[in-house]
Amino acid sequence: MQKHDTAKIAEYFSRPNGRVVLGVDGFIDQIWQIVESRESKTDCTPYRRMRDFAAALARCGEGGFAHEILDKRRTAGGFVANTGMAIGNLGVPATLVGIFGKPTLDPVFAPLAEVCEVVSIGEPCVSNNFEFDDGKMMFANVQAMMDFCWESLVEALGTETLERILASADTIALGYWSLMPAFDEIVGKICGLAPGSAVSTLKENVRMFFDFADIRKRDRRSLDTTLAKLAEFNTRIPMTLSLNENEAQQLFANFDEPFDLEGRDAETALARLRQRIGLDELLVHTPDWAAGASASEGASFIPQNRCEQPVKTTGAGDNFNGGYMAANLGSGDGKLTLSERLHVANLTTGYYVRNGHTRGLREKLRAPHRSQG
Image 1 (cartoon, rainbow, N blue to C red):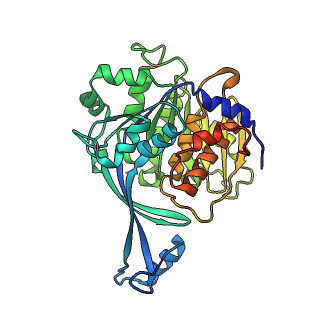
Image 2 (image 1 turned 60 degrees about the vertical axis):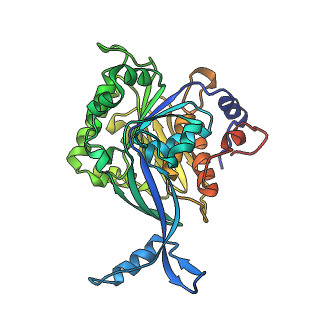
């Protein structure tokens, strides 16, 4: 596996240089397992692989399907909470704007407030997630997101507070596009505050970061429209788009570009698609590898140590994004390279799926004598 400058990474996380602002969702994730068979009152076997559950479902044909489910946990979820927790645990300042409960935070979000600045503007969505060792199924009630728009932000926070929060950011991250009909409008309003605009309040070197989530939820025309707008906005603010393997397959197919799940030729393929889309950075992360293409740094491919017995998989991609954003701040000699940022992102998601959290990861990164590569 490729080695990295662990001393440089340790120094970086000893003195984080910047702030991330994230918005604008908020979910309570109710996590379940589906029982395949029950041996006794106390012993049962859950479905471990999604394909086995899918096969059982398919065998029912047109009949009914009834299976026992096990309550695993109730936790904060969604792009903002999962990504923000990873960033906060890495010691990087973050402001989270989302729907976490109003007038008070739902207790499930209380741990977020210990590591991040949390600004809640409404009641959270609820998602029922069914976990397997190799993936998950997520069924979310997203009605609270459907009418969300720029005016909602202004009404909830006030123009002065909203602009103050955005002005503090070195990276502004939004998710998820697939659940946010007003995504294009919100990005456009933020870019209207970029340096050189009539109302210039953002930092000179601010970056935007996006997680689209399942792009199949929106039609091709919506996707093409958004990508065209982001390419236009990229001339004002450099933009990063992050994809998991399923999202990457869909996006590559939309552009009639080949995509290999094994990661062969990933650097060349990503560099080519990034140029066609017109964004500053394009990332893909899978359980086995991560790759990125940058307009200024070329492309990089970093293997990942697949976890065969994960403690938690829901939120793994968000933790990759959190690790990457936390590693993508600052400038000059101390700034981490694309390869180093991907390495930190891989470490973050790997640590998360093995432990179920990211507490203690910063201390690991700040110990250069330990092997990180």
